[in-house]
Amino acid sequence: MNRILIAEDEPRIAAFIEKGLRSHGFTTSLAIDAKSTADMANSSTFDLLILDLGLPGKDGLEILEELRGQGENVPVIILTARDDIQDKVAGFEAGADDYITKPFRFEELLARVKARLRNNPSKQATESTVIKFGNIVLDLRTRKVKVDEETIELPAREFTLAETFFRHPGQVLSREQLLDRVWGYDYDPGSNIVDVYVGYLRKKLGGNLIETVRGMGYRLRT
Ligand code: CA
Image (cartoon, rainbow, N blue to C red; front, side, top):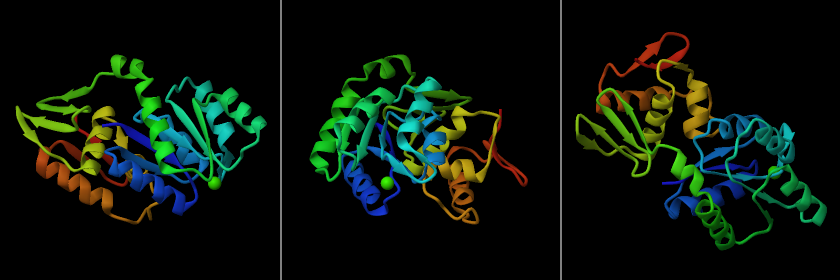
C-alpha cells in the first residue's frame, strides 16, 4: 500500500483529499504547517507528498527546496491556488514532479498520484519491503505482520505505529514524534492515544517489545 503525505492547512480540502485517497486504498497522513511537513517528509516513510504552497510557518516552495537540498527524493505534487506560469516554473525548479492548481477535480488528482507512483519504480526496487526484528516480520507491501510464522492483521494506524518503532530500534520516540508520524494531526499533546495504541501493539506483538521510558516516551527493545 502506498503512503501519501498531505501538506494542507485548509481542513476542508485536507479532509476531502484524505477521504478520497483512503477510499482508493492509500494510507494518508496529514501535515498542517511547514514544520511538520518538513519533519514528516524527511522521515522517508512516504511514497508521495501532496504539497500546498501557502502553509503556516514557511512557504511550500522553500520547504521543497530544503527537502531536495537534503537529498529527499520523494515524489512531490504541488497543489495550490497559484496558477501563474511563473509560479508553475518556480515549482518545478524547486523540485516538484507535478503541479495541480485549485480548484481541482479529485479524479485528476487521483490520476496524477497514480501516474507519479507508477513512474517511481526505483524506490520500490531499492527499498526493502520487509522489516525483520527478532521473531517479527513486517511486510510493508502487504501491510501484514508475522510473529513466529503466525500472520497477524493490524489496523492501519497500529501497523504504521509498529513500522515507526521498527525503523528506529533502540531509539526513544516521544509521544509527540509518534503522534506526528503516525497520526499526522495536531493532536492535543495531553491525549493518551499513543499510550492506548502502544498497549494494543504489546497485546498483539508481545508485552516486552516496547518499553516505556519514563518522562520521555517509548522505545523498541533491542
Ligand atoms: Ca494553504
